[in-house]
Length: 377
Image (tube, rainbow, N blue to C red; front, side, top):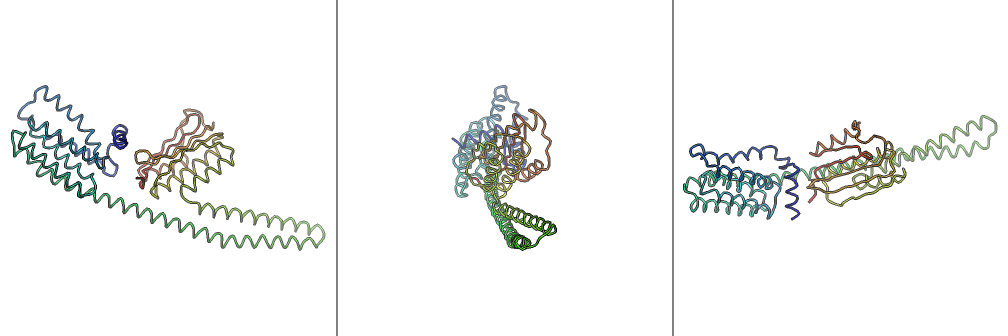
């Protein structure tokens, strides 16, 4: 039921077909015009024309749903397409196109052995419909046997290649993500080992010089003591900043961004209400969400003047959705948000993954970032 509900949401709100398929599925839907060929020679009656329009209106949602289906839902979609073909077989010779659609739907069934079994079932049903129901017999079977069989085999092979490409792309993202983490770790070690050691040495020498200068007297000694104290304070402050930077490099990823967000909001006396779901994310999606979360929380702390912040992360229809809202008064309700570098960067990174960013102003600023989860099951 959850899968069917998710499919219906895709049909109602979009996208109607997976973005990676482009616009070709909409062009394939034009194959329904095969049903019209007969009417060039034999004009349809009012009842038949009404039934044709009704069939198209019922079949198109079924056709779009098949692109989001899997398992038993795919079998159901293919068999319903065949059922429509059987019902129209006695009345229209172009009804064989529904069996072609049914053959194309077989590709969404995994493993490939099951998909070929479903394809054989579709061709068998087309054969029965042609021999038992259609008045033209062999002419009706021409399209399912030639076009339908080739479309079905091509669909199954293409789905296998698409799954392999997705797996390869996910592996590449993981390798790139691990490489970034390794580089961050290397930079953090270098910062700590080089700058940390040097600044610690400066602080220690300044402390030693401060102890030695106390044995001298005069205004010059006091001035020298102040300068040495300033050197020591500056060195310790720089050392603290280096350590903070190293910690920031090491706490990469979404979990680190969430921890940083909690700490920042707590330090700013902003009440946090969070609903964060746990689910698998592709490395690229996690990186985009982590950067967006850091930027959004920084805006809340520095500019919003908020007392409460709501943070949500959920998996919806295969997309990871990050929502951040505050009750600040930096902007008036209904004010158009002019994107700065931070929001522009969020939007560009989301668009690169096929996602989108929505920003609105109500009681405060509301931000919604939606990107394909990729690794989510």
